[in-house]
Length: 399
Image (cartoon, rainbow, N blue to C red; front, side, top):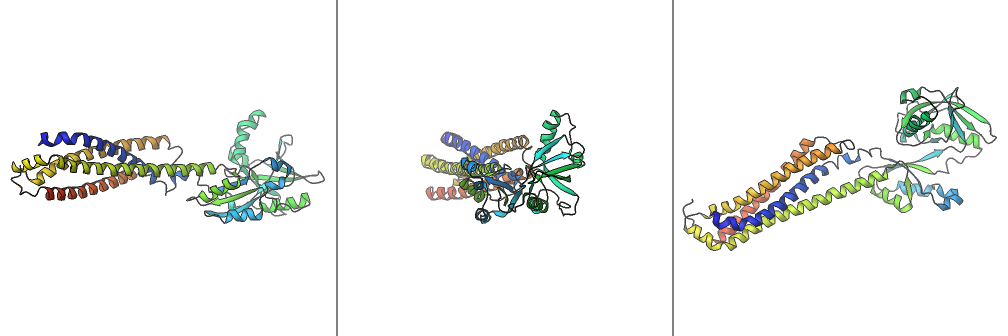
């Protein structure tokens, strides 16, 4: 029997097993990473769903600064986008000001102040408020500014490096220069540090009061050059498309992350469909090659029946070779896929958080195995019925 069938099965099985191995490997890797999409693993660096948006600077803004401001209609259009939860204006100081450490007036820096609604801050907002009778202004400083101080400014001026804790202890003074060039000093204290905004933030009540008091005109609420947009993490696509259409820019570099997420999702789904397609074609080719084999070896199968081999035994022998080839291909893809996934997750583990790796690998392998067993069983039934119809001869003694 080996001489009858093995030669005709060797090449088709080798080819189909190789394609099955490749398809199953793609499915394992794709299914594994696909399982992380809904749990937002690929959003681990973009969980801060707030985008600081401004208009792209062009030559026209040089001659007409008003073109860089957002109108109420433009803000309203953004609010209506699918996936946008809320939008808030970022208010900017309309006066020149500077900051220095109290008692070290020779060390100061020209700054600008900004303010937003407390609900959009990325820090604890308890005590981050201001009233006219309050002597000290709480300030939220960007972490990037602290880094610039520690690694650039302190080195150039022979100053000590500051931690977040020591920086909060510094007695600061903010000096506002009014229209008459008079200096108005205010005591200030660092409330916290933010990684969401590259700015120095003060309570909104203080900034609006200072703008109105020291500029003599209430323009803070209308001239808005930056806004903060809260976007749903599951699908920021409409918002990103709106940015591209209107040539808006994002200052806290979240769009690049979201675009990368979309590309990663697309690539995973693409490879997943390719793997499924290859697996389906491989199973079909194995089934088809078995059908062609019984057509080609029709005379030999009749002879084997006359020699006493039952039709079920012949069918089992032919299908046994296919099952062995399928098992080897699947085991090989499982082992290589698991090793590749473990290595990859270790390599990029510093960028993304992968949890329950072994459990997910087991679920993926089990799912593919169950599907494969179901396909094999169904194909076996079809193959068996096909042989019974073709070789309607009473079976002899089984060997």
